[in-house]
Amino acid sequence: MRSCTIFSVTRNALSVFYIIITAVCLLPGNVNAQDVWANADANRGWQYFGNCAACHTIGKGQRHKVGPNLFGIVGHPAGARDDYAGYTPALRNSELVWDAATLDRYLENNKLVVPGNRMACGRIPDPQIRADIITYLSLFHE
Image: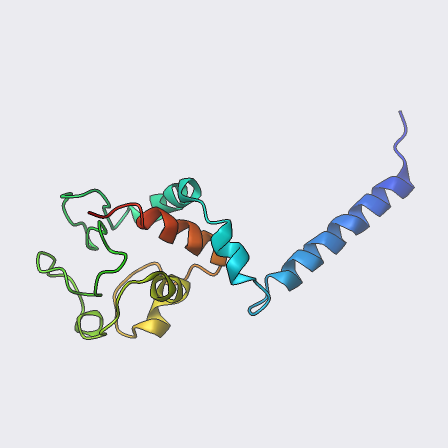
C-alpha cells in the first residue's frame, strides 16, 4: 500500500499552521478572559489540583501541610489563617483578598504578586488551567 505524499505534506503543513495559529492566540493579551471563565471546569481543576496537593489540603478541617489548608480560601484575606504559622511576612502583610482575579494573578506568577512568598509553584501560565483550579477551589466553602 502506497501513501500519498501530497496528502502527507498538506496534512503536515496544516498541522504546523494550526500550531502557529494556536500559539499566536495564546500570546498574552490575546486570550479572551470571558471565554476562559465561561469554559472553567471544576473537574479539570480537581485534576490540576493534584499538583497543589503536594503542599496543600482542601477539605474542611484537614491538617495543613507545607502550605496552608485551602478550604474557604476564595474570598478570604491572604496570610490570615490563625491556625497556620508558615506564612511569610510578605504574604501576611500583603493586604490581598483571595478573590478570583487575585488568585488568577497569583497563580500566574506568585513571586511577582507577592515578592518574598515561599510558594514553590512559581507560575501557571495557562489562563484556562488557572480558571479551572480557581473554579475547583471555589467549591470548598462554608
